[in-house]
Image 1 (tube, rainbow, N blue to C red):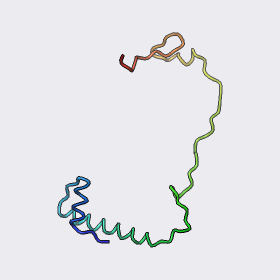
Image 2: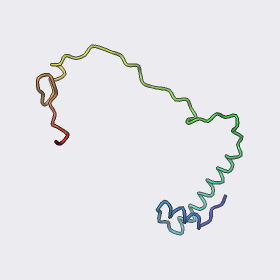
Image 3: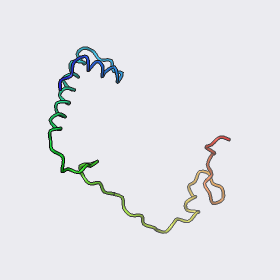
Image 4: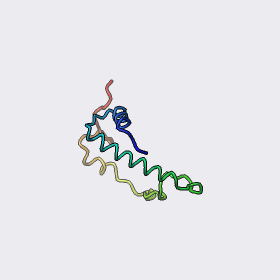
Length: 96
């Protein structure tokens, strides 16, 4: 399918692109080539091909959670810049 210069200008207007005359001609050729490739792809018989979102199977690459011993509160808070009893003290982030 060959696009005309007017169609490319209309597309450029829709996507708010300012194109020079050289760019219009270059994009006309490139977009026409892309559409021709899609026309070729539409001829492929895909009746027995199940619809897929990805061409390869996805799998989870995260490891399982493992529980372990916790640090003592004093050890956790030892480097805290500001603390109050056994808690981190932070500035309020919400205004009242």
